[in-house]
Length: 449
Image 1: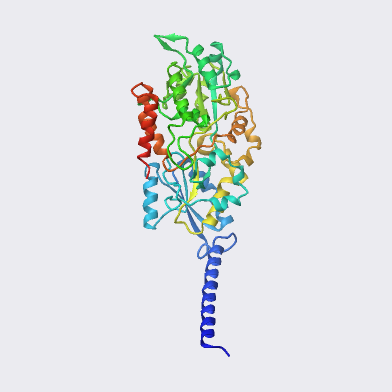
Image 2 (image 1 turned 90 degrees about the vertical axis):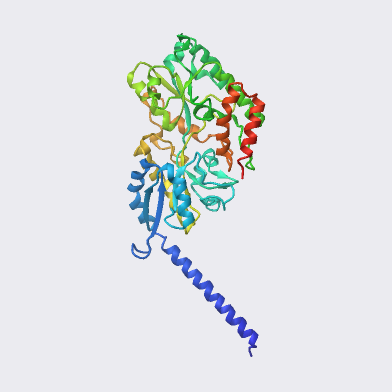
């Protein structure tokens, strides 16, 4: 015979079981709405909102929307949010719980949406999904490092953006230098003195490299890409600034010495291709999205151009770096992130989708996708007539996998800003090197939360 307490316990268990069953049913229904072949446009199709700041990507994603909608039973909405209001609008929509995107396509540099603490990040860590992914092992580790904060991977990179050295073979050989034989940057800058020896009105006719000296030299463009090769990290693994690191100090010292040899010309964004064509820039460090600047000079036919891996900072070091890029991530307020991850991963790393993206001239440039699995396709192994038949994309894909890993964190982009503000004082001798780096270290520490 049941005692009253037994009866109460049974009722409680049955009630709990009903609740569990109901939760399971609701969960299954929710998942079913997101599975291919289930639901309907009226009742079961899940709307997925993608925000991108990249106008040129919209046509491509729109063109694939039918495929994606049928495969994942979703209603894909794509919204372009201008770069200058992207962060503010995203923060506001998520705080209000209205009109927030499920997936964002955003820039790696100065992203301001990632944080070492997942509770502070506007997007979720993907660690759980990545561990069982069949695709992510084919993404260059160096590219993944840019979206890894506090040990958490927050995004999937879209492009690899490997960097090569494009050079005017005619001018360099006329100066007595075969750049193919140059191994290190020290050797490069030593050889550059032969190139800059010819002067007019006291200034070199030809410069070895462009570098942005607007407002004083900065950790940007050429300096940015060479710094990555050094292995010196400006942020430690625990997220603190690291400007007093001896390896970084040595790089800054060496950079200042290089600048004093007068081998640099100002990086002129608006006239870049013209300055290549007239021989002012005898070479330039180029991510995949910037190689096209050589086109006008090639068409003019006055000079012969080649491309090669970057000289190394030290022997045995990386022969490339990267600059720029975008990534996709899932917002913290988005429901069913596990299904959104499948959608996002397929969007970026489905083999045929990647090849279609390249053949559509994604963004108007010949970009290398951050997905090694497709690099064996013939499209990446064609002779490039701009460089005398060299297989440029083959070189770029060969280098992309070895892109340096960069330690980033919450204070990283602040650290870059502080360095750029203070470095001109060091370079011009207003601050001693050690004194200046200590000042940068302390000012960056002051920006930490």
